[in-house]
Length: 73
Length: 243
Image 1 (cartoon, chains in turn orange, cyan):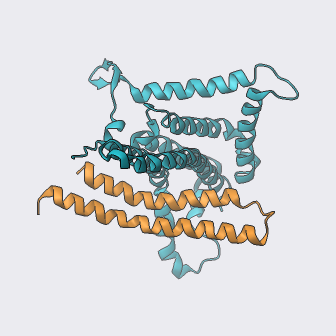
Image 2 (image 1 turned 90 degrees about the vertical axis):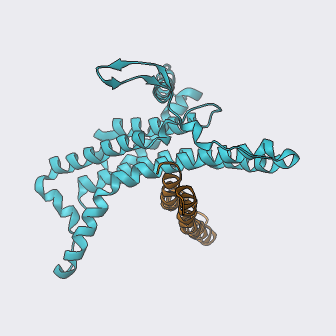
Image 3 (image 1 turned 90 degrees about the horizontal axis):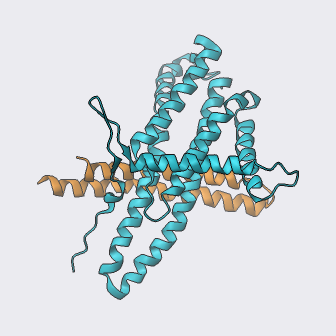
């Protein structure tokens, strides 16, 4: 298998990490909606955005590996 | 119909004023230019905003006061009042990263925070600074940060290496989080933009996706600056309060 093909496959595999990001972000906002529905006066929205950023970051670590494989090696 | 994509071209560093000192290439690059623009904008915001000190603030003064209050509130809530002496650093960090991210959203603007060397430099400064602050305040007692309270001795054998590892991985996660968010966002924008012309009339679909992505990128730009800053505050809290 030549290098270019292997790179493509590697990058594609690395992007599977974004599934975790999707599930995580869904969880965060599901919890936000649940808590605001029970108690609309709760000020949890800043924590929701913090949680979103941290969950997204982990998925993007995987994407960074994909870009690393594609364009650096 | 071949669609040629060069999504990573936008991150290319270009020398604007070539400068060679000794054997070192210290040229003034587009990255440096946008860093200077960010610093000038931050200074302009604060200097212009505090020019007239009215009791009921006008627009610029309001902006300056809101940004001050935002960071001061963040530090007060997360570090406590011992964190007050680090306000200057955290405020500078927040404005620098925020303006860096937002300047990249301007067409033909360069996102200097999309380079790992820039974000790693900032994260390394934060990490080394926070460690030195912790060691200076507590001496060797600082190492009790890695030994959680009330843990049976058998578990400690497993837990302490994990705690140490997760401490030393902080500069890497801090820097890669910001770098990956910025790079992935701009790369996605460039990829969808590349499809627009080649798809003819259906090019309106990637264009629409791009418009939505720009909204997301604006949110991510502000959010990542906030997350970097609040994590710095939390690491500072760990170093000062040790639990």
